[in-house]
Length: 414
Figure 1 (tube, helix red, strand yellow):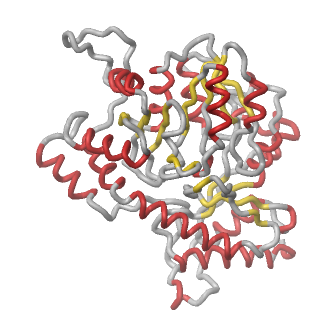
Figure 2: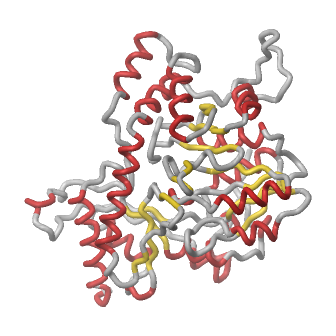
Figure 3: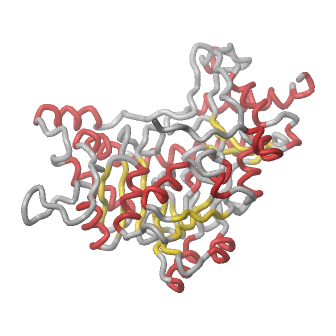
């Protein structure tokens, strides 16, 4: 029987202080802003929820009525074609989820035991797990403080003859500074696989995330800008990467004869039902992105004058899609991050903490024991995201910001 890897925050010494506690219990409270204006007293504002107001139901019903509900049907190639077009790539390969997309891309590139893959420690666990599935060795780097993305100077320092790939993660919708990374890749001969799970529609110098490396990987989980419930996509301009990824996702069935396999394949297929939802979502992606950017602008303007609140970055060369509206809570605010989250939860506002870095995860702690990544540790300790759905209204943002302001004003009463 598989046993969990046991690690308590107390075992981490001083580092244990940055591990967030349990999520606070959400409560419904009558807001101080007049109910006639906001009418929010009877609901919780979730941290994120999908917007399904396009052709989703029509396309799914078409799948059901035509009996094409599994991994064949017209919506899969249509979804792939349209998604590749909006990413600015020649090819897109749909698959079961974002983690699968990363694993499929790495497997397609031949990454395996003896290879090293560099990634940021500040990411979601799927990134490092996908590397581990291949048998390759993950190598961690810290974030840089301006964009919260991987520190490219540390990437340069950690390249070895065994480095086969680097996975830049476009954190919370802000793209990585890709040109220097691609120059390193060309010089040293490694692959770049973008983790664009959070960056649908994000742009780097006018080019879309997912088109910047040798391959890009997307997630379509329910909280993503585009969702299929569960689902993923590999994007690329390389016809051989696209061909082999599509082959491997379907058990690597041979074209010569059925039940004849020359590769170790995977059952990583997307269903026609999921693709139908994805196509309908993709038709609305530009509107979803602009809604998130407009909501981010409202948040930033309203939060800017609250002491101790740091709003999310956007470099001059980037178009941040603000997958999650992410803030830092500094000492000047007068409450810790966790105290502020509890206050918001008491007023019906759901939040989520930043990622816990990979070097502090129980399953990977021994592999990286003694390594320190101070920027990532700071982000983990101080960061969380506010409600961020594309459907979030200006009134809801007003209420959320007012509640943050009230928390700051009441800090002395705690």
